[in-house]
Image (spheres, rainbow, N blue to C red):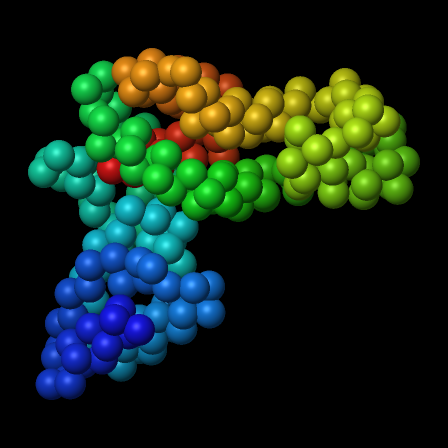
Length: 230
């Protein structure tokens, strides 16, 4: 309620420029959808909205241009498409320093959003890889359909026959295996309660390096977004 009232009060004088700081913070899914739609409506009316957010998925949904700032330094600026474009990312180096605890805290505090964003980021890559397997006709259509559903489930909750099915799938697709394994490893980082912050940060750094050198564009792009989470 407070978030909605704050936005409503900001709109009272019908400003041409609106500055919003984490506008969907603390809202339920319905509220988040409402605020995102409101921002889009205001933009269609010709208003300029400057929004600060650490939720990269949100930025993609509502923004036309983005600036990535880390510790007060401007790391990248351009349209959303330019920032996400592989060539633009090649020219943008975003360091995750060993003492950057803000990044680690942001990732851990928003781990559910991180995992949801990961799933969305590789969804197209998954779909493309399944299409390749379908075109090869080496696996039955029903097998591929059920395997796609298994990949969307929590790996730890899969039964032995289901795990075996995925192993058979991965035997035909190294890319799917890599994306699946990286998902499992990312989720395991914040479950290591015995590790201290420096160790967790190093594990996150290692994960990012492996994602960026995996040869899978979707993994590399997600990793670079993850580095700017703080």
